[in-house]
Image (cartoon, rainbow over all chains, first blue to last red):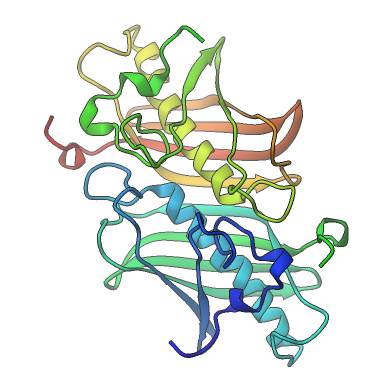
Length: 157
Length: 157
C-alpha cells in the first residue's frame, strides 16, 4: 500500500513498542490502515509463532488485536476532530482492557487479517470490536477498551 | 526451583508453543508451578518487550497469562483426578477466551509474577482468574477460559 500506516505517524519516542513500534527491530511492526469506516491490519506470522503444529499462537493474536486497536483509537480520534494524523497535539492510546474469544484455531502459514470498528468514542476512552480472520473465516472476536495515554507517561521527545 | 514446571511434562510434539514450548528457541518459555492452591509463573522481560519507555508491552502480559493459565488448567485437571502429570492420558488445553484488565502500567526491568486460581473445573472446561504483579503491586487482572484440546488437533507423537 502507498498510504502511510497509523503507526508511521507515531513520534520516534513512542515508536519502540514490541507490537507496533517501527523502531523495534525485534517486534511485530503491526501496520494499520483505514478501509472505509473500518480499520484493517494484515500480518504474516513467522513459523515460530506456533501454538501446536499447524496453528497460530493465541498470544500473538491478542498482541495483534491490542496494537491494531490502540492505533485505531488514535486514528479515530483524529478523524472525529477532522484532523490529519500529523497534526498537533498527538493522540496516543494505551489498552485498558482486552477481551479475546478464540472462535476456532487459526491456521499458521497464511496471512491474517484484523479488522476493527469503533463502537464508542467518548472523552479519553474508545471502545472497539475487532475480528481476526483467515481467508474470510473468523478465527477470533475481540473487544478492546483504549484510553488516552496519561500525560505523565509520555516520554519527552 | 528444583521441581519440574507444568510445561516440562508436555510431550515433545506439544512443546513448540511460542509462549511455553521448551522446544521453541524463539519463544518465551513460560514455566508454571504450584504454590499451595495457586499456580505461579515468574518471568523477566527482555528490554525489547517494551510498550513505551519504562513499561512492559501489554501483548506480552496477555501472552504470559494465556500460557500460564492453559498450563494451570492441565495441572488442575491432573490434581482433580489425583494423578501425577506424567501419567496417561495426557491433559492439554487451549484458550477459549482471555480477558485482561490493565490496572496500571507494568514497569520494565523487574521480575513479573503471574498467579492463577481455578474458579471452576467442569468437564472439558476450566475457568481461572489470574493476577500479574510486580513487587506486590497488581498491574493486571485476568479471567481465562481454557478447554481440553479437541482430539483432532492433537498431532501424532
